[in-house]
Image: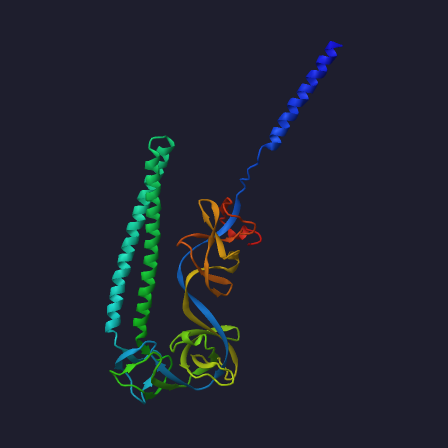
Amino acid sequence: MKKLLILILLLILSIAIYLTGCFQKEATPQVNTWTKPVAVLEAKTLSHQLPYQAFGVISGHQTTTYASKLGGKLSKISINVGDEVHSNTHLFSLDTEDLARKVASAQLTATQASVNLSKAKAAFELVSKRNSNMEQLYAQNAVSEDQYDEMLTSHTLAKADLTSAALACDTTSLQLESLQDNLEDASVFSINNGTVSAVLKDSEDYVQPGEPIVIVRSNSMVVKTSVTSDFLPFVHIGDTCSITYQEEHFEGTITSIQLDPVDSTMLYPVEIAINGSEFISGDFVNVDFFYKEAIGIEVPINSVMLDTAPYVFIVEEGKACKAYVNIIDSNEGSLIISGLKEGANVVTQGMKNLKNDDLVQIASDPLTLAGGR
């Protein structure tokens, strides 16, 4: 009888120990270390050409009015009334002495910004190398916590200097490019063959941007269209645009802008010169104007989400981080945004169910990501 009681007690004790172990296992928290695949786009601040679309109709003989995009003093007029001109014949030029000085100054500024960027990169690489060595020494208790904190501060400052230098370099490059474009626009050339029918200004006269200077009559075709008052400030004589005719694309050049709207539509008429024998007068075309307005980072529209404000996910040190942004404009399925550091990895696919601090891995082939968002 005693043996039976002892066996029963041992059995109960064994069961209790087993159950205790099970409860401990169930109570152990499970850490989710699953890494989510994402596709990214490197953030680059650029000047984006945004399209404006309109319908137009092809018309016959064309009179082209030539004006300068810039204002200033006329330094040279190369033609006279009655002269025959060909495509790319020089018509007139503005004085560029002051503009040339600005370009030279901007070139020096851009060169210095490039030098500063190279120095900032070298400094950051050096600090990063020291950072790596200090990490190892700190792990071995070979340096104090104050020395380690000082190293982290130096690394943060060097990274900030690099970001600032990169932004300054991009800004000065864009400014130089704009001034060089202005220098090029100071000389105006004919876009078609024709005959000079009027010269409205003399050399040494001062002109305003868009003020008519030379009129040429040619036999090329013209597209007649119109734009809204909102878009009118972005349309300039001499700008190129894309003409879609019978599913083919042609380049056109704006030759005339009427500054008074049509009463019935309140739209502003615009004429665009096109070359080619395949056009038929009276046919309709699609016109895509382009204008440089939005300076920012272009990202797919589905990568930008909204809670209290627009935000995107960026990847930092293998983790998803929410970053709030400003929306500047839209462009055919994309958004132009600001508020991100240059070079940041913006998540463009794999955002579905993504949360702050989730572990992520950048996919080598974005096409393998199902569902996109």
